[in-house]
Figure (cartoon, rainbow, N blue to C red):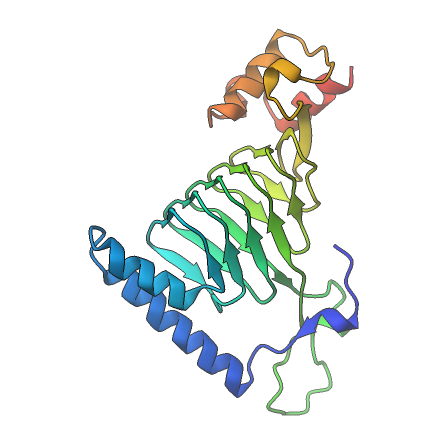
Length: 235
């Protein structure tokens, strides 16, 4: 994603370190609280997060940097072992399903070493590296499959499905199925669902692969690689 100097963030100041310590305390307390103690778990999330709607379930363990930059709508499930690196806002809409081991990153580092690192050798209290951050948005009715990685600046449009194991480097439009590394759209549909699907003519193998994505199955059972699937869709 493109960034500029206004996107650089401070990562080790006193206020930041206090905020991180607070987050570690609250996430640890959340982890240790009995799952049946819904009232206490809810109270911890309300203290930890910037915003949280009704009927939100976050399974443990759950990891985040600040917490206050995470905004969640209503009717949301976030499964176990998810990591949200929220140097900038992470906005999650309503009726969103996020499977286990999903990682959402708002922060990254410049590619060029002279931009990423301090190479002058002088000792200073400033970190030896630079970090930039861009917000991430997951809109209403989205389903994120297990093990998905979402990178800074990405928006995932409403109703869309991101297949398990995908690495999302660019924004995904609404009303589609997307999969792969890097994540690409393999199917589009109308807002009313499959019955309102946009025209396409995949062969039987491609159709089976799409169904596997929807069911969380491994694409390799049908295609040797995501690249083969994408080539078929181009035909």
